[in-house]
Amino acid sequence: MSASMSSSSYKTKKLVILSIFMAIILLQTWVPFLGYIAIPPLSITIIHVTVIVATLWLGTKEGVLIGTFWGINSLIRAYLMPTSPMYIYVFSSPLVSVLPRILMPLIVGWSAHVKSKHMTDRLRYMIHGGLGSVLNTVLVLGAIAVFKRAEYLQIQGASLSNLWKVLGGIILINGIPEMIFSIIVTPIIMMALRRANHQ
Image (cartoon, rainbow, N blue to C red; front, side):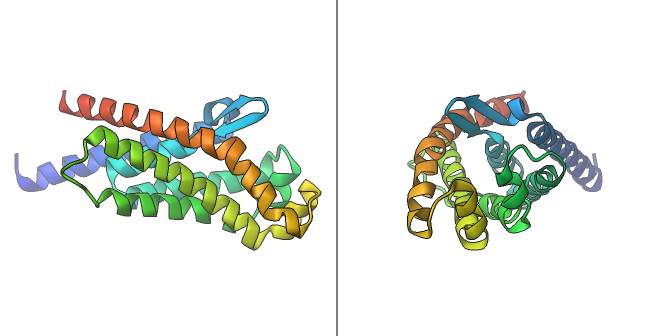
């Protein structure tokens, strides 16, 4: 097989895998129980794990593309199928729904290049899974605090002095369970993908 044919086959395979990740994101965004685990009072987002896995498996550029795709779908959903005032007045801004989803895989992809010979692959995937989850939470809440602070406070019925307490409560209630989920699931998926690839 020539080098050009091998390169073409590799690019085709990567494009197919990228399309599969996009299809998964599409389903997770528009079919609520596929992208969220609702255990009252928790509503744990799990879509970010798909973006993290795509970034670690395909590369930073592809991860950013998948993250952007997620953000755009979230933005469209906020306009077409808002399920709460939060979607209507907060997540309808691309600075909240899209920008953090671009930055998260970008940082995770960069961190994936920093390797240590003393670290196993499983531990590395756990760290990146946790990092990606924390970044997703912090970047989204940070974007809300910077760009949609007034709307968010009005929806929550809180004052400016209580803003960080409210955001901190979200991190404790939703952010920590999401991080734990990501730390557990990311290495499981990555190791399974590696085994399937070798076979």
